[in-house]
Length: 351
Image (cartoon, rainbow, N blue to C red; front, side, top):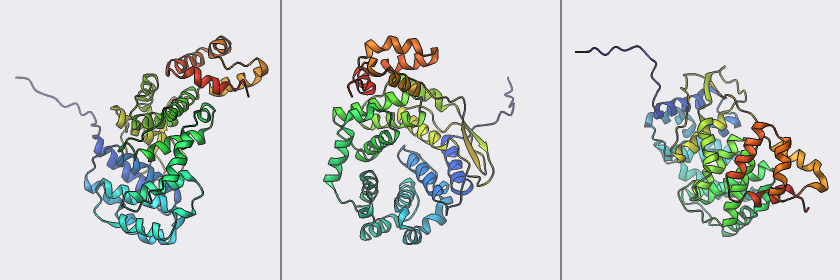
């Protein structure tokens, strides 16, 4: 007969426990709920959980009860933040919060014409998507047509432009209702996502590449193994550490959330680390930028000698790049069958 001896190793909380601890940290300890950045951070956390199939215990959401119960009053005084308020309210309900404030808040937003005050089609699309969740959508087909026209202009996304790339991924999120519906993307729009992914890979931009891979999955496509193997490796490099209460210091929280969101849709492990009671900060260890800027500067200074032919330029670039940069560039070329088309736009040799 043998004896089992406990050696007292600390147990890592299960996923739902870790997520519940994160909710407490974001809701109570990072910022004050009167801070607009509290709205932004908590809206992002709740959206990631609500759109990745998180299974939370009902009591985990009660930390938001005072905020939820004050939503109507907050909307009346802070209508400029209505999209954040709607997002937090609706995601809480969809995650299991008891209450029906969301329908009334959506009705007030529509009745006050807050969406009509938006100049950006992207923000208008976000608002319409939120309102449609409680039956208050307008069914604006002209808006949808403009969004589809934008994401189908593939040449736009062969150039380094993070604003445009994030707009691309978010439009796919809205058109697909965060993976619930087929967004029916054109091949040109899929090409746009692949071009944006190549640039994110060349920059080793974990945040943007995570969003691109999620968007591709929402479109029914399988992202490059090269990209997703790297994302899986990098998601394990996050660390959660204690921080000063309400310090508001910048950290890697968004990369952590988006990477965990990608992991949920790719069958990988997310939400690494063990959240602590009290304030925390999110660190990403060992991150570094890729060769995108160095490649761009070299191409620019070539002037008339620049060519849009990848086969012709490959040798020149490999000769001026270090070993790590050369590896990243070579992997970029292998990550998509459209790399030659990407490089033609990226080189701007015929401009």
